[in-house]
Structures are given as C-alpha cells and as structure tokens.
Length: 253
Image 1: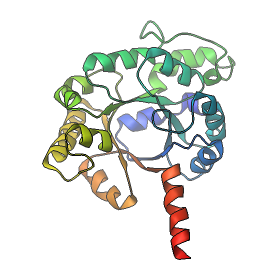
Image 2: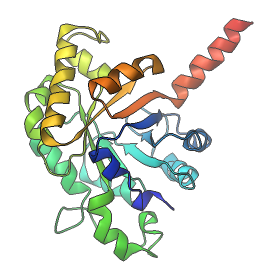
Image 3: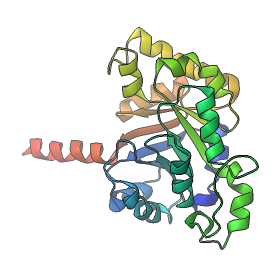
C-alpha cells in the first residue's frame, strides 16, 4: 500500500503544480477509475459527498495500487474524524470552514502523534499495513501526512496570515462556492470582493511557504489559475463529470 508513505507532501510544499479531482459519489469503482487517470491526487469527499465512512475503506483500497495520493475531506474538524480516516490509510485530510489560527493548530495536532500532537496511537491500522510497518509509520507520519485547510469565510480572510503561519498547515484551499456566498457575492467569481480574497490567500501562502489550492469547474480555467499562483489544483468531481457527459450524450440524440 502506497498512501501511508506517499511523498506528495514534499511536492506540495515545494509548490509543484499537482493535479487532482474530487470523488464525491461514494463509489469505489469511480475512485479506481480516477486513480488510473494519471492525476497526482484525489479528494474523497465526506463533507458534501454521497458516501459515508462505511464506503471510505473500499475507495481507499481501490486507489491504493495506483501512484495517486488519496486525501479525505472531513465533514468537520473534530479530532476523532481525522484520526479515523488517517488510520484507514488517507494520505492527508482537508478540513472545511477553518476560521482562526487556533482552529488550524487543533487540526494539525489531530493528525500528529504525541509528543507533536494528539492523534491516538493504534499499531494495527491499515495505514501501517496492519502493524507490519507501524514503527516506521509512527516515526514518519508527521512528515508525510498533508494537512489542507479550507478558507471559506470573511473571518478566515481576516486571520489568513496567522493561519498560514501555523506549522503543519500545508495547503490553504480556496472553496469558491462557499467563499463567494459568505462574501455576499454567491457564485460570482469575477466580483471585486472575490478577486480580492483570492489575492489575499495567494499572498499569504507566498509569505509563509505554503501552497494555494483551489477547485475549478472546468479545464478552461486551469492555465490562468496556475499562472496566478495556485499549485494544488482540482478540476470537477466524478459525479459532476458523469452528469455532464451523460447529458451531452442525451442531447446528441
């Protein structure tokens, strides 16, 4: 299994352009197809996705034979949630709606074992190959687990420098839909307020040596966003891509 020691965190912090997509269907088959695509990472979505934790293991197993990093978006930032998905073999977590540096520090603490954090220790976890490689995993997890913080509110923007400065926060991920809605410009990504927020995030990651992440709705946006400074980039989701493709087939008839 490759996820536990996936070297993608170093690539994230080196600000390499890393390609990704969301898997929100809850389908292990879709996850496996996506993993075979050549993308650098996948995000299994437990916040807005249709599958719950009971479907997560199968999705992680489906992608584990491919050279892709499987991240999991949690529904919220409680410590037990990150501990659970990391033990199952996720390469990192994405946590939505982080507003303050203290909340970001709590997330980082939850993904690191003592004495660096508060993650509970269980040697026969899937992440350590059911205990076979536990000692190595225990010693290296704080170096390999990627922590992705979503910036989606005006309060987060006010605290952006303090959040970006937190040791162990690797990616500040712009959630376009939620951020635009919370700025009172819902889905208007050309508004003055949204553009200013976007630049504030990019400036903060540049100052603190972190990566900027974003999800795009199509590849036509890709070149401009990468040139602008986003390096941890997702395009679309499996259910969204299927919905679009099947409608195009129907329209062709």
